[in-house]
Every structure is written in structure tokens, then in C-alpha cells.
Length: 339
Image (cartoon, rainbow, N blue to C red; front, side, top):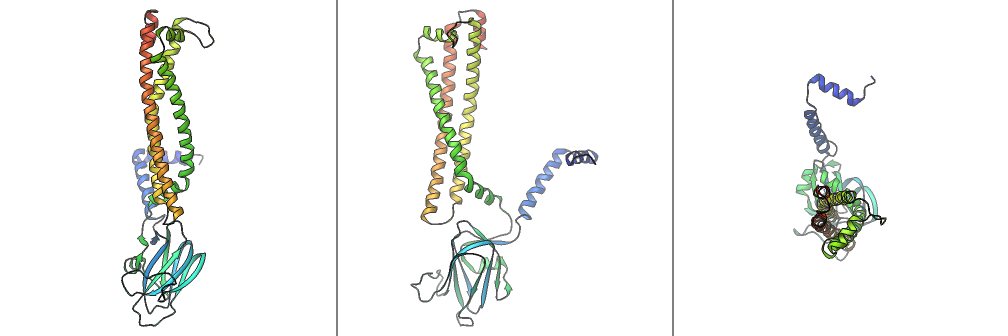
């Protein structure tokens, strides 16, 4: 029994003559099915706004909403359903009875009907919350009777929720991005800014060498060690050839890496902005902030790519110019430059 689980599974695969790729595929299918069907598969009502509006029969005595997690409830109101429009929720309307809850976090909300047994056919119930994210209702009780959530959503709810049976991983991903995108994007964009500064300085210096320096100045710079001592031509050309090769590889890498990071930040910022909750000025500011991060990310990614493209072009031009200047030094030197 000294074998690890990995060794045991591998030996089991060999005994069953099953291909590891097939088992990996089956494990992927099983993980996906478990995540969707079982880990979050309990039926629920997802409330996606700060206001929930639904109707109840005028004869009901008490209705209880049971939440999956505590929800800050501001108030609920009971009004006659005089039309198909949502009943007002302010004190200006005498027909609405308002019960204030002062924003307390409640795991369940009990709604009592003061006019139980009245002849009113339908009552409109409006629940106002201070929730900044969508919240879930796991059960609805009406006069000690559990109401099926699908029936309650389709027949009673007017505004604010949807019936869910499965787990949607996009909600978890969106919540994660909404929580951490701002700080992560700040680090990445700051690093991208200094990469852009370094690229501008590097490419600018290379353009001066490639297009402004005379052949004699460039030859002297290429053949002189940084210490000021002149070494063999072959050794110096080998150093410059290796340096140009590294720069070419770096520029080609940045041409893909810069836009990829910018695109990922753009999409994550858009997801974060669209996941921002409902309707106040502060939340509108959060939405606009997410859009701002998305546009800046796109700009930085494109800037890195353009700078890398220009750097690769100038590097090739500098390489060709050095080959033209120094090709007469020796056949071995020319071979080194072309390599």
C-alpha cells in the first residue's frame, strides 16, 4: 500500500487496457456534469435587481421568502393590483401599506397581510433591498404551503427574478473578475506602461543607429568594446549578431504577447463592468470605470504591438546596414553577420 493514488490509477488503467486520454476525457465530462448538476443544482429563484415585485391572492395570510444567504431588506409594501402596472412604493400613495425593515440582513422575510380575507382579488408585493449583487431565494411559503418555485416565478413574479435549476459557471467567473479585475489590471497596466517606455527608448536608439549615424560612426561603435578597448573583429561581430538575434526574438514575442494581454484585460474589464449591480450613481461610476479600464487595456496592447513591429523592422535594417559596412572585413565576419 505504498503506492500513491496516481500510481494506483495508472496501474488500474494498464490492467483495464484503457487509454489515459480516454480516461482524462471521461474525467472531464464527469467534472463538468457534477459542477452543473449537483454542486449548484438546487432549484432557486435568482433575483437580479434591488427590487422584487410579485402578486399574491388577496386572501393570503402570510408569505415567507427564504433566502440562500442573508439579504439587506429595506422595506416591503402591499398594494391593490388596480392595473397591470407595478404599484407605487412611496408614501405618496394611500393604497400602499409600507413596512420598513431598516436594511437589516434577513435570512427570511415574512410578509403579513393586514387585510386577510378581503374581497381584493390580487395584491402587489414590492420588496426593496440594498443588495449590491444578485441573490437567491431557495423557498417560498404561502400560508404554510410550499409554493413551487417555477410556478411562483412564471405566475406571480412581475419584476426582478428568474428560475434557475443548474449552476452557471459564468456567474462564478463574472463574480471573481468583478472582485479582482481592478487590482490585477492595475498591476498589469502599470507594468505594460514601463514596457512601452522601455520599447520607445530602445527602438528610438536603434533608429538613430540605423538611419542617422554615418557608416564610419556605426562601424566604430560595432567594433569597439564598451570598455573602450578594441578586440578582434570576429568576436565583436559575434556579440552584435547574438544581440540582434535576441532582440528579433524579443520583438516577435511582444508582437503576440502585448495584444494578448491587452485583449484579456479588455474582455475581463467588460465582464466586470457588466456584472456591476444595479442602478445607483456609484454603480454607474463602477460601470464606466470598467469600460475605462477596457479601453486603456486595448490601447496599451496595441501600443506594445506597434512598438514591437517597429523594433523588428529597425532591427532588420540595422542588421543589414552592419552587414553592408563590415562585409569586407573578412569572409568569416560576413558569415557571422549573416548567421
